[in-house]
Image 1 (cartoon, rainbow, N blue to C red):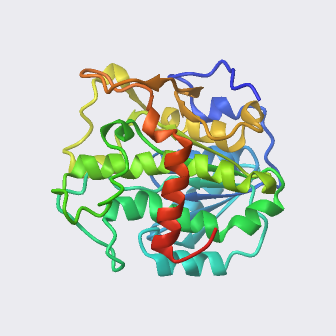
Image 2: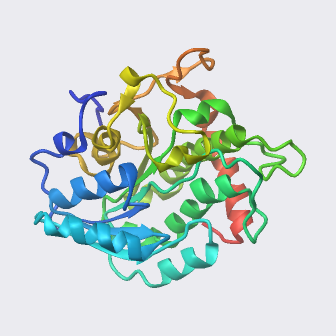
Length: 307
């Protein structure tokens, strides 16, 4: 299960999937109608997959899907409504899914919401959107993933995970003063830990799971931060930003690989501390198995489910 490959920072999603045949594969991409989600969808469809865009605004997503379809790729694309921050929407999506699932790409997300917002269940919005809703989605789709005998669950995380661990006693900022980047960091750490939990819990179903940092890409994600501030030479295009996602979702290079965190299409090193000028690697707390199992128990308790 080697992760060695020749791809890196400049690689695009199309380059990563060149020669890969995905006919017969069914994949869900949350937030797959904009930003790196759009390029993830396009590359997977071009390689022959049937991709479902799970979108909060399905009418807008359908326009995107129609544009991709007009490009006459070998695969196909469709749209279903899903708001990952709304657990009733997640339940509805799961209840209406009735086919095997080869890949689930947890791509939708929000970043640095300026003021504290909560869901109807009382969860902090970034934690709910980036992590908890996707966790609920994965749990609900487990049986369909198991049917694929080799399904992959991929979570788009971020170097933001280097800003914060899980605040075990106060994940919803009821006592800790709310900070947009701390909340974002916690949610992305949770995404990484989810892949470790899935690997530990669902290995007998043949399901693998990994997380990734897509890089610095100018998208709507930075609408609360005044835009992307990363130096130009360290930025990626959306096509480059989707490369690591499609590598983990569909490339034979990483078949069987699980519980890893990737950056620039390569397994990321463990960081001993957050750098002052650069953000590289993954924190030990984000890949710790005990943390992953603790989060699993905490999240299933929040959802009121067993998994």
